[in-house]
Length: 259
Length: 212
Image (cartoon, rainbow over all chains, first blue to last red; front, top):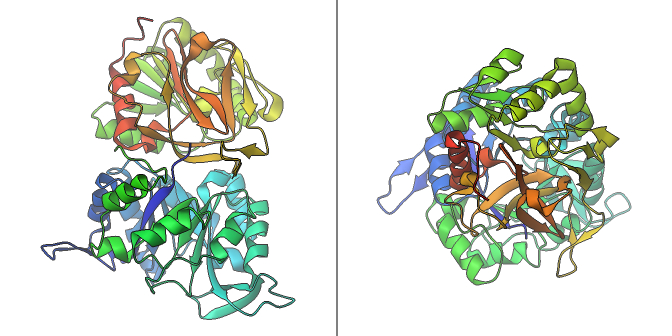
């Protein structure tokens, strides 16, 4: 049976991770390549990089990071942030990423999903969705709305409808980020996640809200997620990826235990 | 020298990078001479069977692969490269290379787990392998190792004699198949961590024979 995936997420700005790993010795590793290797050796099933570099002049730095990561770790990894064109996708994939993720660009121009899927295959194209809970309405029947610009702009698009549309356009996977849960460490969004996951036939990665291993367990079982994104709880050393997987394994969640 | 066959079938650089990490020299090539003169061949592939076969034929590499197979060169098929070595594929109704008797099937849809949960297609992520037979390329791999899969079709050889390992995803399908000097894996060893690298390393030193 397929294993549930544990996926650390690294935010990268100008070639450096914005949250370094702080270990017992309080050593701060800000190098994304080093961090990726550390998580690879800890048993991460995949790694997500978000390039939050503001200036497009510095995009080549990210390509260099991707190339260096690809030479060091031999699990899939995806790159998101600032991907707007087929050419952006091609550069990242040729540098060695397995997948690219599109978010705002796909909302503004959904054709990027179908163009990307046609050019590189659906398995390469991840749709990143930032979602906020709103009052259910005629326009937003699910009660969850797509937001962009880091949650500042409401789009008037229903999250469930958008997930289905993106699947139809050829997205191979959805990374579902709850803006409400993000950063709270109070648990993943447990209504939204199964709603999306049960209504599409592509994998859903739950993102936002992990504060402890129970949260991860819940989203992978009751939440119907195929994978869980983790950030702060592994970056700050609250848990290692190994501890998370050992705990899940002991609680009968199928995870990859040998690496 | 190891030839990684280039027939526009997706991104080959990850296989190249993995071999480089393992200190084996390789070349991504579509040159017939280079392929026929190399020591061993890696035949990767991502994409659709119909397009892949059309590209192979256009480059004349379908015949080259058959020649190399008959010349006893060790060949490793990966992902789509583990499918189009069979006779035909349901995907695009493609006539394939026929190095192994059998065909390529689409996963049934809907597909359900043993717990009656609806399974998503493609089969994407980490899964294990149930090993049926020993093979030098699988040396050191244990039943607890898992591998990274991304596929909607699976190989179905005509006889169990070609099946070295199977994987469960709603159904039990052949995930490692082989015949003579050819071994092929449905998963991506270059993306499957240390266990995948071990398979690549084993292949790079395999003499193309196996005892069973």
